[in-house]
Image (cartoon, rainbow, N blue to C red; front, side, top):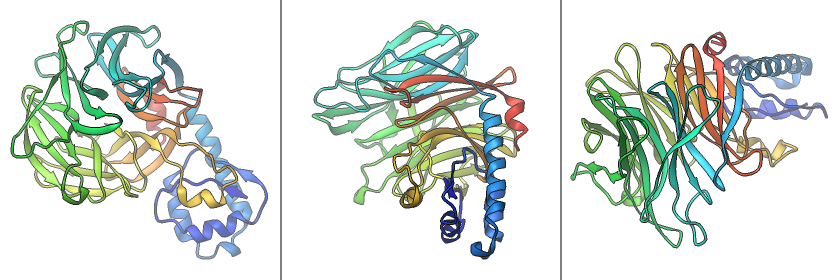
Length: 399
């Protein structure tokens, strides 16, 4: 039996490999339960365990995954450019707003100019119209983040990267505001506290809480190529001051901030160089942090806090490189998925959305008891933007 496993923790790799060699039957799973981690930890000798146990267990998992993913309505909503990617989603003035990058490739090169940020909107998620296109001759704009400011304006924060012949010269995030969701201001660079400013500053995301915006900055120009993530605060979306800098291990970068109903701040951070994602939690004034290592890598992470105990994480699901030697299909592609997790980072279930190849960077929101998700994927040719919808109760029932 050949089993495709998602690497969700310290399961016994050797035991799994022995069992896999017992049968020629190919069997793929599309969902992984936290029960699996507990089950594998209790097995001391795989050779003595009946293959039937694994077959029955994974059959149930496959059935559960199929039931849950079928509850999602998924629709392609934009493919206007050669490369459409890096989405975010928000509800503003009775419309869904989706922002994403449009370009001729994943990044600028000799034959591809800078990317721009396209903003589309829809009342019900069925018919979408373009409301703005934000661009710059100097900077490649990408990874837009949407938020509503305390004064009611819609804000777009976007990364700005300066290239010359495919070489990265500098980074500086930009912002744009709109009072009506139709007319957007010309993008301008953010102003970062001089004592921490660098030539490679990326204010990745911002979340407003009361009258303060909290933002995650990551920098890559440190000695020995050390990457840092810094928590910032702003009152106008333009000027940013440092609150605390973290040491989060291997090359931390993309980070999203949310708040629990009880006022705690949560931050979800992607790490490179083999590092799994990490989830931080802090009470006000957000200077004393507790960190939980996740059991999965993250790519383009986003998340929603359901209550004081549960969260939904959206991310790329990476192909497990450790399992590639035993997989028949070594070209198995990455996916975009939703992770049901506890607030301390324990992954309960994973749901794959229709996706593959160049994919991820979901926007997520809850509106009228439905979960809405935007993401991009190249599983059907070039990368396109997709809009998914499911009843929130169907998701919560999986906990």
